[in-house]
Length: 87
Image (cartoon, rainbow, N blue to C red; front, side):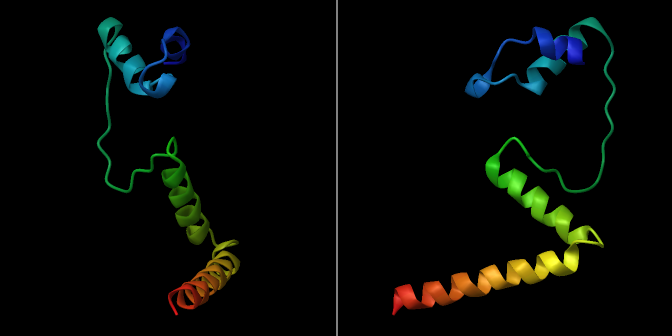
C-alpha cells in the first residue's frame, strides 16, 4: 500500500487520498476487506480527531477518572459563561 501512496498524486483538498491509492492498488492486485462493527473516526478531520482522542481517553483505565473530572470542570465553566452571556 505504501508504494501506491508514494506514487499517488494529491486529490481532494490537495492531500494524498487513501481511497485514490486503493483504487490504483485494485487495478494491479487483488484487495481484500474486513467488515467490522464499531465506531469509525475520521482523524483527518479536526473535530473527528478530537472526538477520537476524548473517547479513547475516557476508555483508558489510567486516564478516565482524571480526564472525566477535567472535562466536567470545563463544561461547568462553559455553562456558567453561557448563563452570564444570556442574562
